Length: 308
Image 1 (cartoon, rainbow, N blue to C red):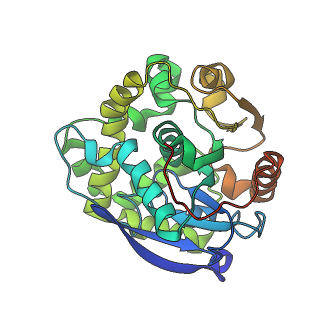
Image 2 (image 1 turned 135 degrees about the horizontal axis):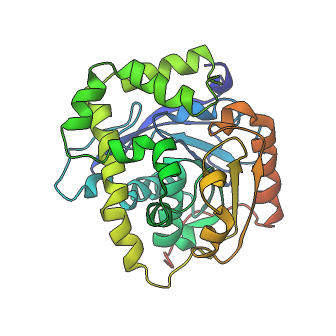
């Protein structure tokens, strides 16, 4: 893949799952994690990753359940696909490379993983940029008919197994295209090689099952975890960017909702649809580079004693 021509590919064992990732090989530099959304893979960063500050060790994993990463068995409470489990995978990746901390750029489902990372492992996250989401719990709590019609998949994918799995597996590629093309004004911004990776990875019964479990977890155990946080909030700087031609800003007030969950928050709408990293990659990479640089943080040192 052209954008990842200089990136290595690896599979890393993380407790109960093996995670596939692409990275630029510069493990002696501060870490930048780039986390993808549904129903994509790490390939979504193919235009952004080469443009961010080269002084970072850029790591682009496939989340558990997606792409070439492992797909653990489902469990009754959906804990194996909770954002807490996914966040722990990402911390294990940082440990593998010897990184004390990281900055995170994340989209969609990956941004929900980043949110949980910041709550469960605050000492490991220096700053984050979140693309086109508001907090999960608040989005469900503030759901309207307009949102339910636009984000119909949120309510379809959480139905008990095997209903959504069987329906999707009747034509997984067609389902992928309908969902994603509709969310991009009917004009998919996907490079043909990247699109083929998305479709090939999604055309798999285990991926379909796992991605449904991701959404079931979001509507159940993830909210349990959110509620258990009490007054705990994100303490690191957070930049939220949402799509002017998307649903988040149309159906919610993203800044108001993020102020409920984070102390140091800023954000704005950008002229794009949901898949902004593939539509306006230069703008996204520049905003990440500037925002992370503005935090004035030096290179991370090898991890020693945890202060989480």
